[in-house]
Amino acid sequence: MFFLSNKTLNYLNDYAEQPMTIDEITEAIQSNRINVTRHAKQEAKNDSLTLDDILFSTYNGEIIADYSYDKPYPSCLIYGNTSLGEPVHSVWAYDSVNQIAILITVYRPDPTRWINWKERRKS
Picture (cartoon, rainbow, N blue to C red):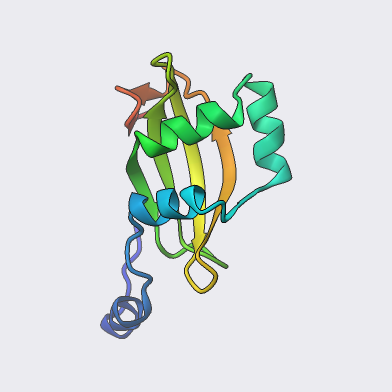
């Protein structure tokens, strides 16, 4: 275990990105301001997920993990279901300057690693 100094904690609090909202992602998607990484395309193909599956699950999903400190853009893990009710996890970054959503990766969550698709099981 390690501890951060008060100076470090104050710096992190002062310069931390604000938590993302799903509205930022969905508004960018609706305005066709999205980028999909090669990695995300390959993972979607591996899990037989279409872009429609991914976007539907994002529109109807919820943020289950916030990675505000990610660089170059803050990101988050979204859990949602396809139109057929199948669970999907997608990691989205958001470029607030250009208002672009970036799909980093996407996958069908492994039920042995997740509780109710939202909470990681302890190993």
